Image (cartoon, rainbow, N blue to C red):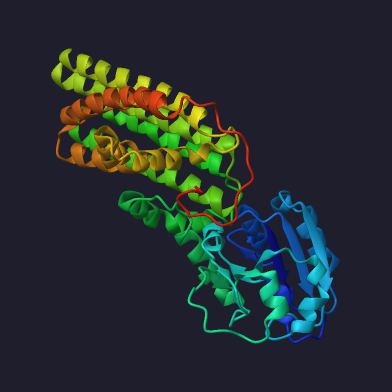
Length: 420
């Protein structure tokens, strides 16, 4: 897919002098223009055509060509023209040989995320507003003079026109740094995390460091649960809740900083699994101190189910996703379950599967601790863990008997559910 990146006149004395200050201004820790380009590559763009007028600073070309965030680009071409857009058909004809059949029109200052670009529908006419991104057809801009009816689609994102609007753009990015499949619990968690995430984008703290911080909180939480006292357990539950929030923070930060990776996905997953095991160990120890040896049997059943669930789901993730895209696992499972709703087991699993997510489970840990129902929580966890690994084995046979998916290029236009 090709993107036409439209740049202003950067030359001194031009009417767009503010552009000289804005193109390199940090937006959530990344300069504006590299962020625009990186967002396009995440949406499937592989070829960029830079359209500009006036003097073109060499540092901008170097940033786009050699920047780490643009490493996925196959080519970067340049097209110096006087002006582009509006009803300037001669200028379009001038660069016709550089256009693909369909391309993404992308203003240099439009801040969005990959889903904001993936949702764009192809227009078969001139856009009515060239300051907004659009997906266009080559023939439409070459042979159709004038504008058609007003475009019905409003693109997602924010135009950065001043240093004041940078803050607006950052708030928009943080607010939309979740996943399309987020439920009410995850959305609430991410809402709580927004101020911290925005602050972290302007530091050198990495998502993996946040993941480790969440693990540290889980370890301390285990210590307080193990004391076997109500208020100590309550403090432990709050720490575990904070650990779950950091689990949201690392993902949000990774997406905002374009630092998400296969290693990061697996690392976060293993830390989450370890935090579950630590939690159940701590609660078991605390219940043993309160109720004696019978609590050990309940704890053993819970840990057995948890360990087997972790092992089987890790195996399932490897079989159901490509090695470079383990983050697609949950979306793939949801899609398979939705397509298999004729099966009553699949319907039931789809309706309750969200409960095993850490972002959901932390709420129930806190609730059951406040109510003093930790034994009940362990019973639910023991039954749920056993059903999880049994169900995972069932679906390994039902859905994942085929070979592991091979690598394939990202399609530009797809639904957000398909592109996690």
